Image 1 (cartoon, rainbow, N blue to C red):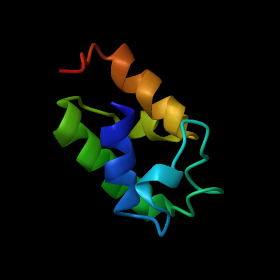
Image 2 (image 1 turned 120 degrees about the vertical axis):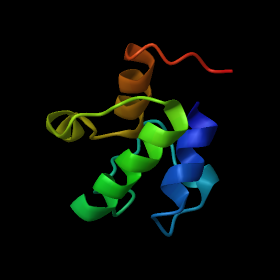
Image 3 (image 1 turned 90 degrees about the horizontal axis):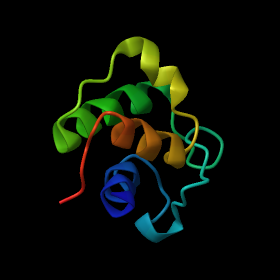
Image 4 (image 1 turned 180 degrees about the vertical axis):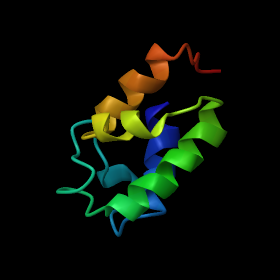
Length: 78
């Protein structure tokens, strides 16, 4: 799952996929704007077949927050 999340995030930041860590902060470390994050959420919903309500978006501070959220919604890595 981390590999997939890194791939998605690397499309929106100047950082390389291998530079993105579980502890990376989306705004501070990756330089993502709130607009970027909304776009990324759409990509995550499509990739992991989950629905992420708008009020849950603010829960995503680090890459690990995304992993835990998706796993908490029952996503099982193939």
